[in-house]
Length: 68
Image (cartoon, rainbow, N blue to C red):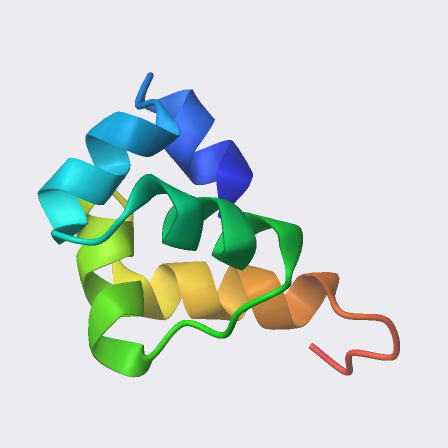
């Protein structure tokens, strides 16, 4: 998720503003210290110009032991 944000040139602050959450929450999600709910994930993906389904497929494929 960090890579998607950086690829479109958004700072954590800018993304947080778009998502209407605090920058510290974005940081915690990116560090794996907080879970992201489905609706926020969808908004995050769209803010970064990636379709949520495509993003999820990429995340699952990157997981160790993935059969995809």
